[in-house]
Image 1 (cartoon, helix red, strand yellow):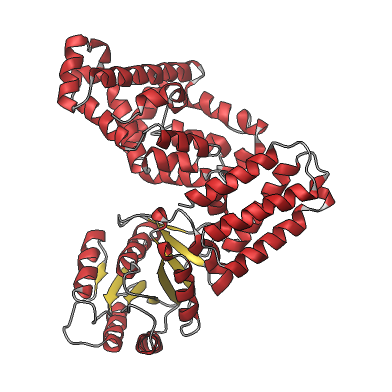
Image 2: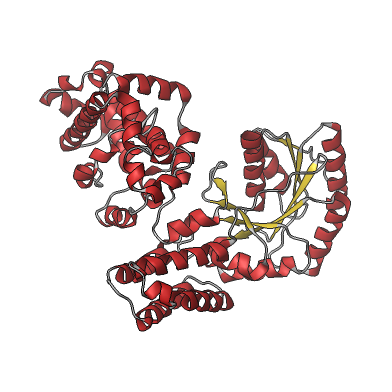
Length: 494
């Protein structure tokens, strides 16, 4: 997400950082480029004007231009302004009320309202331990109620039984009654959409709100529609008491105009961002993290959270024990590749790593993609159990067999074996350093973390030591630091 905007801004700020001293004209010229980049990203014109004026006013001050690193100071000012534009603080759902807490989902048809309802239901159930009931009030779109029922079965969240012919207000009343009887914590109401905003739609929303008294009213908008999404949000905000916004298809939004304009134009916080079609592809919207991604500063916290969410305890314990002994075979490598897939693949990880923006672009230009992880997994899958445990047994004849079985070339098998050899060497080095504790000391507050206090803070209480534990420690991504030398060869498309 935000790829095109991030590229444009990255070029502007690289030029500023490259200068030892800045003049006011340099800053104003850079801000003109920032203005053009934001407009091309489909950010609302009034928002762009306020943003550029605010940043320019602060950036041309003597404290910035006369500082030791004026380019870095300007980038910091832009980062702070971006965070403020996006909403400053993460806006969580307000669930402090007597149960059942009602959340009403509203929006136009095709915005992803029903799928977002199921995703939020799954999130509340799994992350917050809430008992959730979902009810579809959409009696206009064919099979809309059946769709929510199927999604509910997939995510393990109960849905209100369907009664054919019942109207939205009656369904809402029945859902509220059922939620009270079943001691439900949160009731999600998936309302009907329209192809465009009209009086009938608004009257229906108001009638449902009157009988259900929702604590949260979330507007679901498609981020790919850009400025239209902001206009829709303004229309709804003028008629319904909105409490927040859910942006869908954020993974396909390279411009980011809707996200950057939404809070400033409507005054309503973005509470969730849907980043894919899978039912777990939704996350709370963190303004600071998003600003960091836009400016190429990375998002270490999200990586750590992804690692924590995807690492399986038994795998982590097994690998930690083997790492402490300096052991690492093909089965361990396969575990790491599968974990990288669960975390979103190489592209997703590179996009969140500080300073990896250019590396991500180089990967794309050289023909690398996340399918390489699947190819590597296929190669390992074509080996016998003995060969996975003792890869040194793979002679020329065995390599030919493995290549044919995985649909790859012998060269690919050799590259994977070389990658494994380097990662195994890294495991032995970790053992010499004192195992995981030694590795943690190197990256923690007593080691590199002390030398880079800013990065140390990004990774949370454990600093970079926490990141080492999540990524390179128990169940993480050991040896990843040894990959760049051969990344182009190892990960190139066939």
